[in-house]
Length: 84
Image 1 (cartoon, rainbow, N blue to C red):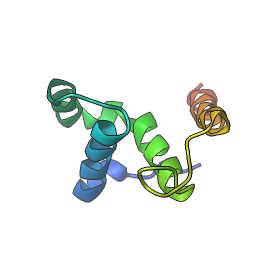
Image 2: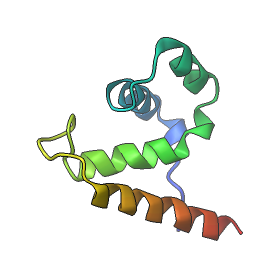
Image 3: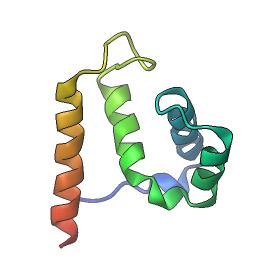
Image 4: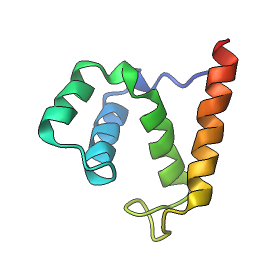
């Protein structure tokens, strides 16, 4: 599986920053850390993609469900397995 180079796209970095504020309730001081070290937020980028693809609020009308969290954990766990 090829990792998407989202860090090379300034628009995607801004999108993740917006996602952190709108969905994750990040405060300004937390957001500053993101802009210092965006490479540490790969999981949040994948979560943003999941929200957009599945039209989960605020990126659509669907509500967040526990099933969505299981899918995100599956993505994370596969990534951990691939790095071994």
